[in-house]
Image (cartoon, rainbow, N blue to C red; front, side, top):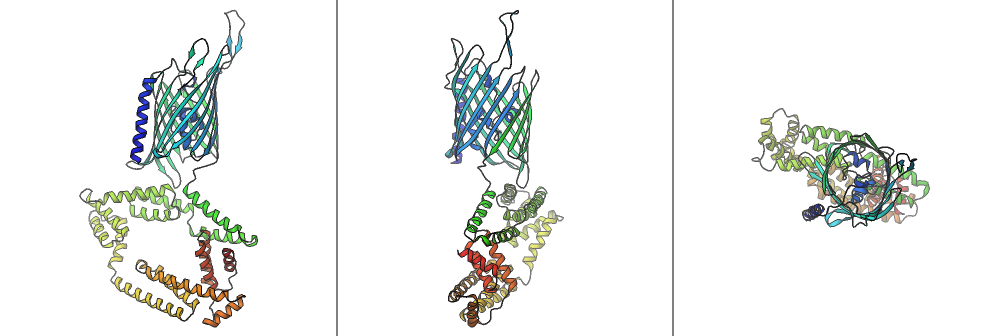
Length: 615
């Protein structure tokens, strides 16, 4: 489907480009030959890289469909002899896949002196030309292409005569994200716009003057230069081909964006060089450009404001949903205990996750190891980071890049450098747990590069696992001890000693988790969980038969002797319950709070938490 949609887009662009050369008409360029976007102008008036600038409506309003925010922008150009070029534009997302844009553009001449002859007293006059645009943009989802249509009204007041007329613009655009190139992933864009079609023209005298048809094919390539933990620096090359009045012209631009916030730009359009910069400051964007023309420098300024972010990151969505769940749950609870429980639950959750500052430090180390070709070090660090920050693109980019390298380099030793193949084949076997094969490959590698600290370290680590003479004995001892512990727990269950059974089965689970044979003991772990659940059920029956907690305690003690209060383990179970509660794992949290009360029936916080959960 992706290949088919790409072909459809390509055919549309080629077809309309051919039509543009056949259909091109007009006598001369009008005042709308140059658009109002400062950010586009600084890049030689190329269109596709101005996705924070709603005045892009003029060039190709299908781009509005890609905006992450609603925007409003004001811009001003001071031209020659008091002439000014001003505009205001706004875009607003009406529905998820429908954007509305409105733009107003004015070219004012400033004061002009009119005389009938050289001796006449001059009259001061001004001329104004206006363009009003209403644009609607949407996306054709089967081919992932944005499309737009503009209704434009152009009005000219030339002091002695004035007239206005309507025209229509259409456009389409598409971006191809995360396209693999040799060292990184690039973004490509393509767009096509046709301006002033089906127009009424303007009649200033007895002859009607048609609006000039403008055809523009736009392209873009954006490449990340520096990848930070949650931002990146990019460099973007844009090239547009414009056909107006039967003439083809090339426009080109270059932009360097720092941390997705600051931009430096340079561009070219026929016989002109432009430059400029942009900066995002809170919810505002400031843009400046300069035109180095043959007469004098022309300065252009714009200021935009954005609001209503629509495309939230996956990380933000997950955290928002997690917090929303916590808030919804707390609303059902009594006001007196709500704040304390919420704070405790959030604290427990935060302790479990590394801070973003720590993650950024680890990510920087992983990048350094990656750049040095120490992919084992890099992989282990990236795995740690991704566990806590799974939706940050940069750690995932490097991790996937290493996996791709591993897949390519470990295919066949006949297609690769021999030592390189040994490295990657060992890497593959290491992470798949095939330690014997891993050692064989890394032993070959060390014959070529015996000083490689990384491989030596990992070779020793794997060798210790493989060559441990008591490994099999340890497995047998582990299994024997595990079966003995499980047998003791089942006997306690049969003797109706529910609390002791729970403790014993939790010891079984802890024993399994802390061992290196977890994979071969999974069935035992599940069996222990079943006995815990059954014991909890039996204990629940006992507690339900008693109205007061003291009587509950006495009756339980009558059935299996005195309950041993273990406050430390009870606090640990309560903390585990808080973490599960903060993550929205409601039933698991309830069981942990119940276990806390089994270990310490006097645990007040567990009682309160359990009460609110059940409500």
